Image 1 (cartoon, one colour):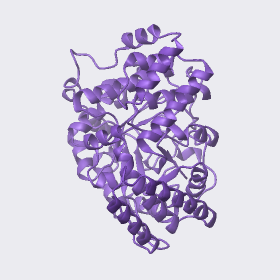
Image 2 (spheres, rainbow, N blue to C red; image 1 turned 30 degrees about the horizontal axis):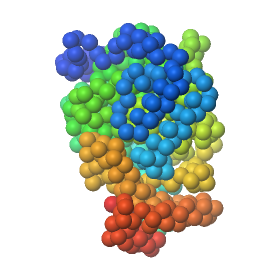
Image 3 (cartoon, rainbow, N blue to C red; image 1 turned 180 degrees about the vertical axis):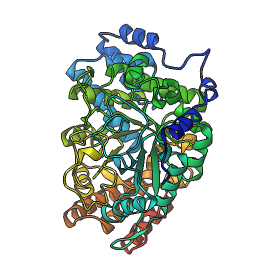
Image 4 (cartoon, rainbow, N blue to C red; image 1 turned 60 degrees about the horizontal axis):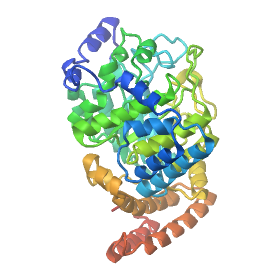
Length: 503
């Protein structure tokens, strides 16, 4: 791999940001985060009336992006009983849009080199405690072989620091390499069918390279929507110090042809209510320009990182407030997928999973950790931050099944073109859940055949039988008899070794 000098890194940084690719999205020279308006809206909704909150909850079932005033009112609720009503509605809305499915994935960290100095991040360039490495394509293959052939994942989110060694060309090559890996397993073939990307903001010309390489979802977290806080934790002389370049990263992705984009905030950097309002504003601006909002929303909380001091951060989010903000987000952006991650403890994961649609499992965030023979202890010096849930995928799936959740490994909708604006209407109407119900059963049975432990397979197949009977009861309301017959045929074929069948 090419060695980069300080001069070459400066040259790379200088050509990356295009001011035109910021200015084109501004309205009267302003970005869409109007802080004064956010504060005024929150202040105007203090001490909301219970009947008003219940009216807002009722409106949320229409599966439309919520008005800012209503979001603010929900955020201001402190009464535990009323918060519980909001959470119950969030559970019901998630079930209405996504049924009882939970999608699992794993992060694959490909490089820890970074030119930025984010105050909260273990990968920051001035942190001497972190081991710096960028994976070669051979190492990417080895990591993928474990993820796809031993653990059984079908989806990855690949993660990169911002550095010339992990530029758009490297990211595109990484995706192509991952898609090429095929690993024989019990009865089928282990493979990654969808690669999502968490990377730094890119210009449109580079985003087109990722689109051509087969990107799934492009994920960029704003970290904090509060301008002053953003600047305080992202030094102005770094690439990440440009607030608006990051704010419009997903707008550029849409213009590059990537129609599934993902927003997020790092909770703990600033007031959690403000950040939720910022995320909803982000969804609204995407809808304004492109007619569709974010494909997924993430809400990670700050966790410790080696060589990193969090004493100056004063906005840590309590478990109660964290649970509440997840419920509010489900009502506020009801059509979106919502991702909870292993930053959280198993107890928190279990308490909010009914409102969420995705979670990671058996995650390792050290560079090269998957192929290091299932290392039992996290090596802090190789990681961006520390995880709180290190359960295996088999353990996660077993727990989800006991709770009545079917784990979906489906990627059919993306390959069939149900992305972007094509999927949003289906999600809002609940019709996408019909397709996904069938595909969830088929892909779950496939995973049980190829990877499950004996106990998990026993529990999982009992859930599958229950799901099949539920589908049978939905004929002809949601499924035609012909569709149901094909589904049963495909289910039997999977039991006999056929793979990757879908609707």
